[in-house]
Image 1: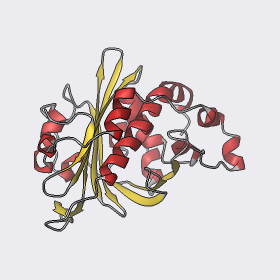
Image 2 (image 1 turned 60 degrees about the vertical axis):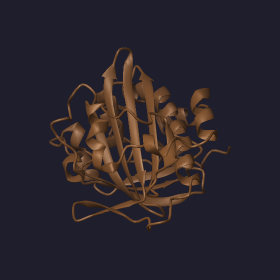
Image 3 (image 1 turned 60 degrees about the horizontal axis):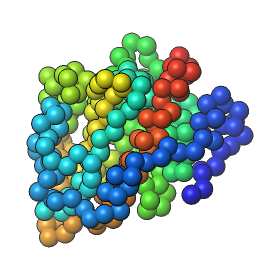
Length: 262
């Protein structure tokens, strides 16, 4: 695939070297999952039970995709990130969406065009804890998950606002997390959680495709009897394994070099 374009200013930035690197090689097992049959819908976690995911009690799909019986698209992924820490990941979600678009491009140089936070001053406020710098921030994004470039908005919130139990945050299986409702052609709810393990960090994701969020509630927008097309969760899974495999490769170095360069 071709890489996205750089402008002259981006070419002069010190971290442009990561843009020129080849993307990390995706594990063969995950490639097979992405190209294979979708998982059993019965193994998908209902959004009403989302706190089970934070606790580590979700015994269903760990890496895969499906279309649930009610028509909702579902994606799950788990990535071990060698030499990455929770602190690094919290920094990344704050850092990559401000200043230069190149920050988003180095994450996936074939599919990421830009991610622009609407509240950079809030992110840069030293009084805001690193683990809260996504709360109440909208990321205006352009990316291609395999269905063509698309503009979307990720509306990040405090986990409590999405009905997550804040008592779980900080526990062994959920030392950090970010969550957002995606507003675009196919609205979706996204949650990433991460926790330190021996040698690095586990990064786990869940997506429920076909929900909007209004008045503190998730509202299913897929009409009864209809379903999110399978190609949507399949494409999102394939994109997710691509971008987070690459982030695992570059993040320790990017953090070491840029952690104080906001």
